Length: 294
Image (cartoon, rainbow, N blue to C red; front, top):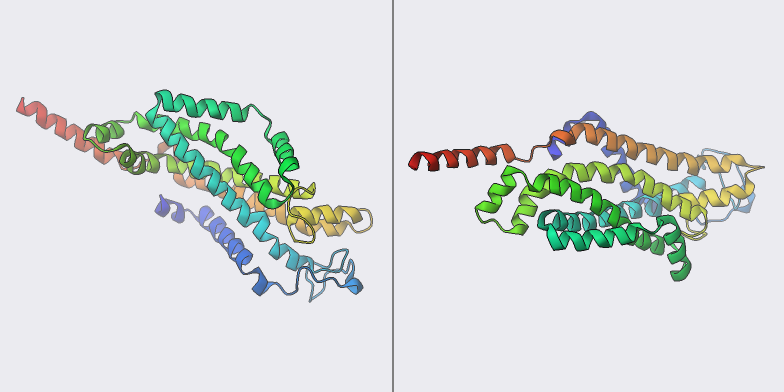
């Protein structure tokens, strides 16, 4: 799968940009030209200049440095939350889709109960109880996010669990864990990758929205949604303050949407092959030999 993905030019370009953003997030203290928390009253609402390429905010802080520091809460933590959601959802989906019967029934009923509550209202309610902050927002999103992914991935697992190569693997005595890891996981992983990549943009927008509402990361720490919240106070007099953080949020969301589209084209999810043709051919050959012996 990795070779097929890296051969696709669209995926490769998007992946390079994403990796570059992640690296910038990690090394922001080294590359940021100024301290993102440094207040300079004489540079209040200063326009872009050689030393401040995106200008300064209402406290004279460097907007460009704040955008770089904002990569961590706005992107890196979002990616970590998405990975956590998908690990939980994929594990439960494989268990439900392969075991079926009682295990499937219990997991799906839990998912139904969780999905019966509006997610946005639940986030607001739980954050209101446990307190605001990016960490609390991410914990709540993970707790409320896995049921939907579990139902979607379960359908994919069930589709492949009845394939001949899985039946053959079961008939020769392979354990459930071995079948899940070596047969089912390679088959469903392309679909999981496409779905997860496509929903990262939505998660970034959600985290930024909560920060914009004042529920996420708190001032004076830099975060893209929080920067929009602070810029709205001067929207009438200095509308340019909202351009930079809004452009970054939209640009990153478009980037992940393009990445998901190109990833889907590269993997061609409808025609995924995970080595099952070779296993099926071997199975048929063995059956022919048994028929000849008889």
